[in-house]
Structures are given as structure tokens and as C-alpha cells.
Image (cartoon, rainbow over all chains, first blue to last red; front, side, top):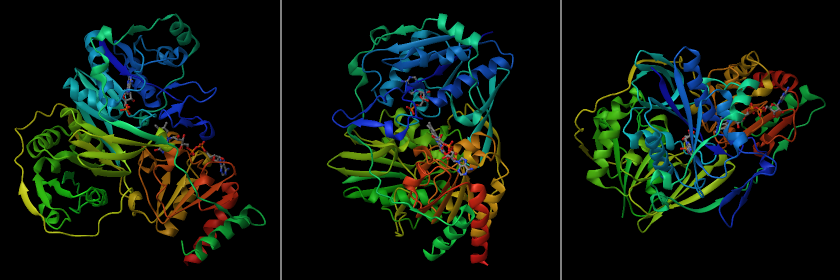
Length: 266
Length: 318
Ligand SMILES: Cc1cc2nc3c(=O)[nH]c(=O)nc-3n(C[C@H](O)[C@H](O)[C@H](O)COP(=O)(O)OP(=O)(O)OC[C@H]3O[C@@H](n4cnc5c(N)ncnc54)[C@H](O)[C@@H]3O)c2cc1C
Ligand SMILES: Nc1ncnc2c1ncn2[C@@H]1O[C@H](COP(=O)(O)O)[C@@H](O)[C@H]1O
């Protein structure tokens, strides 16, 4: 029997964008797309794709559907999960969907999942690197009324359930989750695989399946925000570093220690 | 009046956490605050001197560390419905992040995570939270109630006050079926000093090049009586366990001295250490971001700088 996995993936500005390129338009409270740095699939979401692929590698018959809500999708970025080995890409693509809040995103995801058909597992990222909220995957579990396990670093099929490890601050827990469940995946799972040439070729031939809000029976009024963004700005830093220079690097080490002692820091 | 339900966590010794003491400070900064702390059923003893107006015990919080949080979410949801607070506050701990989010979505309430400032007047709450890994700050206004908030560790001073709140117990809801089950908890042996509590933290990054150099960092941490931290890059490489990761998705530390060795100072890393009293950086690249955050620094190769630094610190401490 095929295990149908939905992976939630968000398109985000590349978090490796150099700080000098990170700019905000304070008149619209939005981040300006950095020049020449294309968007990427959120890092933890690629970990989630990797998690799904690991179930396949372990011999399970899985179908992996990547689901994303947004607008102005860049296909080179969004097709990466397909190139890694995912089977389908479903986009809810409509104007303004890149600016909705977590509550609205959960509504759209829930509607899209319902429309797309039955599933056995939903994997989401731990958090999206734009708004750093860590809400959507947790909220989706609540709205769908499904069991939830957060911060999953390892998973395997165990009969009808999923055996997994959940990261806790000083170690991990061994957990058994039923299907269907919602899991949030964290980077402790390990690096997502690089797409190989064959994967890239296959992905280039695949077309995303696209839903609009209307297709999902939703309208803008369903998406009104619970939080109103008043101001978005880059905080000023007025720290001034005191660089310690010695005759050579070893001497700098000595002088640094003496300087910290003089300051009564050590 | 702003009525606030503050979910307070306690550690294994039964002491209220620093996060909860910080949350009390935050809660009391709201105008005309009426603060009720929600505590685990069996922590009622130490809770009776918290600097709050009232204490409610909810027994499921004590068992919440099973990590799945089903019962505690149900019990807190019922408590919020029956007491209809304006604001519900959690620390952004593992527990607070998950239960705060579940609670908000279950009650269709507004939710803001990782807040570093909060203020409130006339039925609306405003919060400031770091976004884009800490590259920017966002201010939000929340007009609906309840507003569920989680607070970043270290963003508020822990309260030093005590009080004599009234204590009552809230009956748990009908037992909720636990659908995912925890069969085992495997915890790393505690270091002599917990990273989150350490006065000195020595952290290493990708520039260390491998696991071995962490033994030098450990020597330095031991001489200082501190703990060892790491960047995510060093943890992801497998050089040190992830429980040492400092940052946005790791631990938050606020030592007197944070020594960053071969760490570039990405905003997501600084999110976990920027409230340190002094940051000291050793990095061979003078342009790296860490020097924008550090108070003292050496531009140089750690392999040359660190041994003499360690030797001198050792002499000074002898
Ligand atoms: C959503 C999200 C969450 C994240 N959460 C965290 C987090 O919690 N914690 C975290 O740390 N990161 C986090 N990151 C990753 C973060 O963005 C950086 O990628 C990471 O912190 C880089 O680690 P680093 O400084 O060790 O490595 P690098 O950025 O590669 O820096 C290595 C540094 O070492 C220096 N160096 C090299 N050789 C030497 C030498 N011989 N002597 C001296 N210096 C040398 C280099 O000059 C360089 O500055 C997160 C990222 C995202 C997107
Ligand atoms: N617009 C979106 N489309 C698809 N998945 C999303 C979207 N927003 C958030 N997610 C998923 O929810 C996780 C947590 O996001 P967030 O709550 O925004 O930090 C992400 O890692 C994604 O897996």
C-alpha cells in the first residue's frame, strides 16, 4: 500500500543573503528582494523532503507531494524537492499569498490538503526562515485535529505507525506516532541530499499542479490577519569592537587575556 | 485592567525557571496588569511565593514533559475559555513553543512568538519580535483577545520580587487520548555547568575545521568554570552534539563573557548570545560580522591565538 506523504514547503528569501544586501522598504513594511540572490525553499522544508525520501530509501512505497502556498514562485527554487526525488508539486498560487500570516496560511494549506485527497503523513519544517514563527505546521495539526510530534530528527516506518526521535534540549525522546500524523522536521535529521542529474532532468519535465484561492473555495475575507504589522526595520547596532593587536598572533592571545583581566571580565 | 494568564514552568528541582521569572516582569509591564500564574499541580509549594496576584494549579503541566502535550493543551484551553484572560504568556521553551501555538490555533486566538518587547493599553497589545533570523525587528499590534505570546529567553530581567498569591486548583479536563506515545527519554549527561546558566561560554564554529579543537575549547571553559557552545555549522558537521548549539534554533545564553572562536556571527547565531555582557571574538577574517557584535576581538588564526590565550588565562586564574 502506498504511503502518501505531504511535505509543506515555503519559498523564502535566501537566508544566506549577505547582511549588506538585506534591505527593508519601511514605507511598505516589506523586505526588498535582494539583488541577484534568488529565493530558495526554506531549509527545514528540504530537511522534511529528505525525511520523506529516507522512508522511501528504507523500502517503503511512498508518494511524496510537495505543497506550497505563495505567489511569484520561482520554479528553479520550487522544483528542487522534485529534483531530490519528490513526486508531485502542488502550488496554491494567488496574488498576495506571500504576505498572509500563519493563521491564514494554515487555512489555505488545510483547504488544499482536503482538495488534493487522502494522505497518511504531513511533514513540515520546524520554522520558516523569513518570519521565524514556527507556527504553521503546529497550527495545521490543530486545525486538522491530527496527532502532532515536533522537532523530529529521525523516523522510520514501524508497521502502521512511525517510529521516531524527537529532539529535546539535552537529548532526544523515542516516540511512536500513528498515521495520519503531522510532524515538524528539524535540521538534526541531517543534510538534505543534493539532486543528481537524473533528478534534475525529471524535475524539469514535471509541471506543478496549481490551485487558486477560488479553486479552494476561499476568498480574501478568509485570510484577514490576526496581527497587524505596524513597523518593520533593521535594528541599529552601536557596538564598537576593541581589536587587540600583539607583535604576532600568539602575543595577541596573551594581550587579549590581560585586557579581559584588566576589565575584570575574567 | 489587563488580565494575564502566565504559564510558569518549574525545573526538575521544583524551582521556578528563569524564563517564568522573566515572564512575570514582562507581564507586570502591561498597564494595570492582573497576573495569574498557571503552575503544575505538584509545584504549588514553591508557587505560593511568586510575585503574582493569583496562582492556579493544573496537574497536567507536571506530566507535560512527556513531550507530546495533548492533555496539557486541552486543560489550558479549558482554563482560558473559563477565565477569558486578555493575554496568555509562555516562555519560548520547548513546552511554551508547542503548547502556545497549539492553544492559539485551538482557540482561534492571535499568536506571536519569541517576543522581546510587549506593551498594552486599552484592550490591545503590541509586541516586537525579531524576524529574518534577527536581521530585522517587527512590531505588531494585536486587537483581538486573548493574545497568546511566547517570550524570548533573556529579553526581560527575571523578577526578584516575591508575593503571596491566592492559590486555587483547576480541575483537569476529561482524560485526552494520547495518540503519539513517548517510550523513552535519552538525555545527555549533564555537564558540570549548564550552558544556559554559565557565566562563561566558549563557543566554536566551522572555522575550527573538525571535532578535535573542541577539546581546547573545553579546557578553556573548564579553566573559566564555564560551558562549551557551538554554532549550528559545527553541530551539523557532527563535531559536537546539537545540545551545545547556541542561537535562534539552539540555546539562548547570557553569560558575562561569550568567547566566539572561528564563528562568523550570522544573525541566527547572535540571536542566542547577544544578551551576553561581553562578546569576545577570535576570527581570521576582520570583516566578519562577529566583529560588529563583539566588544573585544583578535583578528587571527585560532590555532595561533588560542593556545597563548588559554595559557595566560590559566596563569591569571592560578
Ligand atoms: C532558520 C535558521 C536558523 C538557524 N539557527 C542557527 C542557530 O541556532 N545557531 C547557529 O549558530 N546558526 C544558526 N543558523 C545558521 C547560521 O545562519 C550560520 O550559517 C551559522 O551560524 C554559521 O556557522 P559558523 O559561524 O560556524 O560558520 P561560518 O559562517 O562558515 O563561519 C566560519 C568562520 O570561521 C572563520 N575561520 C575559518 N578558519 C579560521 C581560523 N583558522 N582561525 C580563525 N577563524 C577562522 C571564518 O573567517 C568564518 O568567519 C540558522 C540558519 C537558519 C536559516
Ligand atoms: N506558505 C507556506 N506554504 C507551505 N508551507 C508553509 C508555508 N508557510 C509555512 N509553511 C510550513 O510551515 C513551517 C513553519 O513555518 P512558520 O510557522 O512560518 O515558521 C515551514 O517550515 C513550512 O514547512
